[in-house]
Length: 338
Image (tube, rainbow, N blue to C red):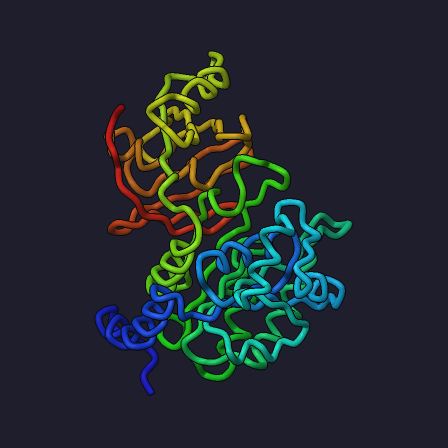
């Protein structure tokens, strides 16, 4: 069996499995699984159930699964009045039994990764969850890792466990990373309307992952504003606050101020909606890079210097690939100057 395939051959091979799964997702026939029913997983499960999907939550805590099945919410962002009808209608259920994966089409992994004393993430919950998922894993599935972790976890840790049975990622199953973006207690921005960033192990994986999220979460409120400046020796935070809530952006926006350094380097500061100044931003870096390239200030690849450290971005056809504190593949539309 040959190891290498052309991109055209891969697309042909991937089409049948991807097409079947995509049709299930669009028709709401896909059976959704959420592993980890904490402050990330339970709100996500609720949103997909509200969108019409049949959702199964899996958690090792018998107390959590019991309360979910009773319609009793223990997460502040999920009201019992919202949860209970979904449980009563059969759209949402919870279990401690990972064999439920056999009946699922998609699985989101939302387990905790607490920091150790050495300040690195404890990966044990991801590892144990993936081991359990792998025992019941089958072709045609989409798996998305949402847990906060270090770059490379999806392909270096999760992928080998799922591919042990000889299944090929991007052809037989689909694997993505979409870092959880939750602001507990924020009444304005919650799971449903915080823009999701999703990247796949292959282009086919990214396509399926993006389609999946678009069925239940708001994906249109993702405009970014990039402002070229000569330096940062002015009150750019005040300007960011003014731009963020400008009438041109009905859903508010993230603002990136960029200073060109050379043809392949830009220095950036971020002012994000609802958060203010931030040290780093994957979406903000992407917007700044696209603006710099579109206006002829830089050319791909571009190193984006942020207060938290550099990010490396490159354009490949219609996609922007980012490597830094996160690994992201993004695409969108350049709307020009405003």
